[in-house]
Image (cartoon, rainbow, N blue to C red):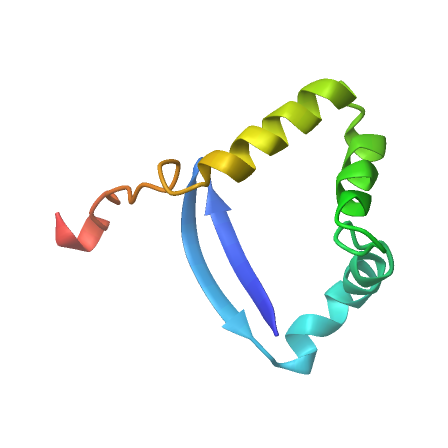
Length: 91
C-alpha cells in the first residue's frame, strides 16, 4: 500500500491510499531503499538513535537529553487537533 498526497503551497490538496501496482511501481526503487536502510532496525534500543545521530549529526548530549525528556514527558501535550480551513465549496 502507498499513501499518495498532492500539495498546493503549504496545504494538502488531496490524500489517498492505493494498492494498485501501476501506482506503486514508479516508487519501487525508493521503497526498496527505505526497506534496506531502515533507521528503526537495530540490536538494541539505542541503535536507531545512534543511526539518526550519524545521519543528522546533532550534538549527541543534546539529543540524548531531549530524548530522555520526551520519554519521561510523553507526547500527549504536543498532539493537539487543529481545525482545518473550509473547502472552497463549503464557503
